Length: 150
Ligand code: RB5
Image (cartoon, rainbow, N blue to C red; front, side, top):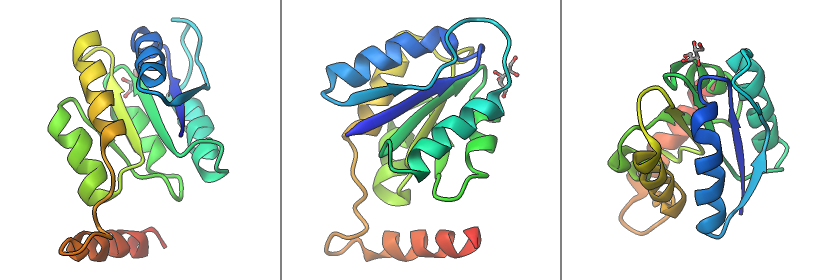
């Protein structure tokens, strides 16, 4: 599975760690920048990552800024992108399992390297359960979210 990874300058301190853990978990990272602490605009990187998801170049994405907030807001403006800030492992896996989240947002000014590794591991290890027997309610709710998107 290909995983798009992008950040602004605020998220850059976490990017290399994220790429390393994505690779260590057996996934293929798609590095969409930015590549330094030089100031850039987070919507530009949310757009790159969202386009990669929309075009099928990556199945999921990990997007970082200083707080995770700007990245999250921008990413969710893009059709087919279902992003959430997760600074804990429970949200990172439950967001996929119940809500079909496909983009994980984190703030590099909020969490450190070790929590980020665990959060990425929880996110990538999770699968949407809405198609499993007895879990149809999640598919029903996600379908309603898709309706809102229209
Ligand atoms: C950039 O300074 C900062 O505003 C940005 O990374 C992000 O935290 C916005 O939500």
